[in-house]
Image 1: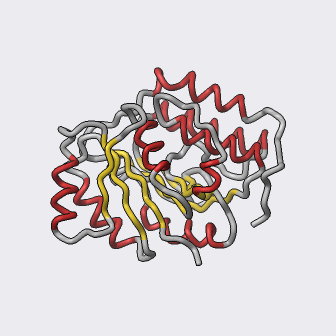
Image 2: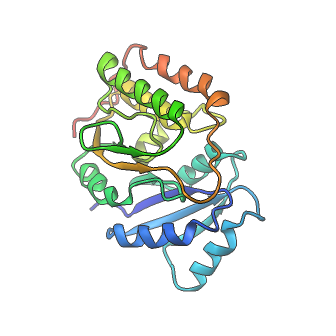
Image 3: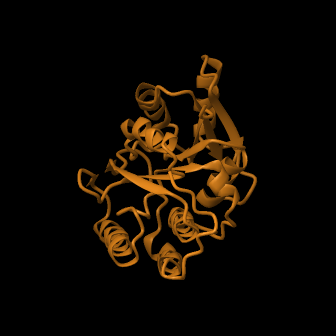
Length: 241
């Protein structure tokens, strides 16, 4: 039997978005799940909102303070550390991710795929809004790694992915700053031969709050993992789904 789904949600002052995110999540996800909301500092505006939901009966909702390093990478790693087994989904609280895709992602996980990508760039996927340069670089990176390197997803940079906790425990995560952690994990999983799949999904730019994505300061880190993908593969851990 598949263990319950763990959903890691890194937050930064998402008080305005979180009630809408929670409503959308509980509507879309019918499988048993635990939601781990990871925050950096006690004054984060999201914290009292989550505490209120917990007090109101949201038993599967949990607040965790980031203990790795401040920022999204530390928050995501803190969430990973809190999960011992089973599927782990990373999702943002800004309503950008297509939560209607979660049950389909779980279907692929139950079939043996250890990394499942919600893809904006495969047939049937969409991206609505967002900075033009960010969209362009992300699409070019994803499609070129798919066609030139054979990575089995068109969208390796998307943070909205489902992982197996066992896969995550085999990796030494080296990312330090931004969402390049998503590309790093995908590239390392591909090189190690872990079974990977993708499903089409729609990404929407946030309508409330401020994005913390910093293209120019994070671009060199993305490039590091982009070129890392062309290293020889090590298939000792490969497992067919």
